Image (cartoon, rainbow, N blue to C red):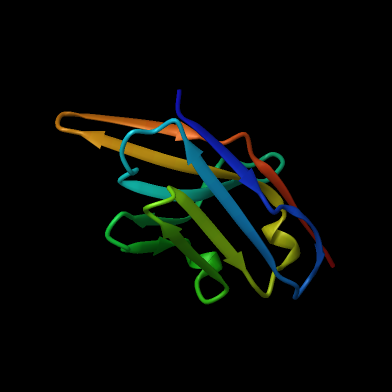
Amino acid sequence: QVQLVESGGGLVQAGGSLRLSCAVSGNTFSPYTMGWYRQAPGKQRELVATITSGGSTNYADSVKGRFTISRDNAKSTVNLQMNSLKPEDTAVYYCNAEFRRPGSKIVYWGQGTQVTVSS
C-alpha cells in the first residue's frame, strides 16, 4: 500500500518561509512525477509545483521565484521550500506522486498539511 506523509506546515507571518516535506512509502519503484498542490477554502485544488524523476520542474506562475521544489529519488521524498510567503498562499497543501507503467498511470495523494500565512 503506497502512502504519502507530509510534514512541515504551520503558521507564519507574511514574508516568512516554510519547508514542506513528503515521504512516499510502500512503493517498489520511484514515482515518475512528484508534486505539490494546494486548496484554499472555497477554491479548487490547484497545482503549485511538480518535478519529474529526471529533475524537470514546473511551477504555478503565482509561486515562481518564491518556491523551490526538490526531490530525492533514492528516498522517494519531495520537498517544497516556500519563501516570501503571502497571505494568499494560505491553503491546505497536498503531496502528489504519479507512478507510471506501460499503458497505465496511478496517482496517490497525501492527507494534506495546513499552511497559514498571516498579514
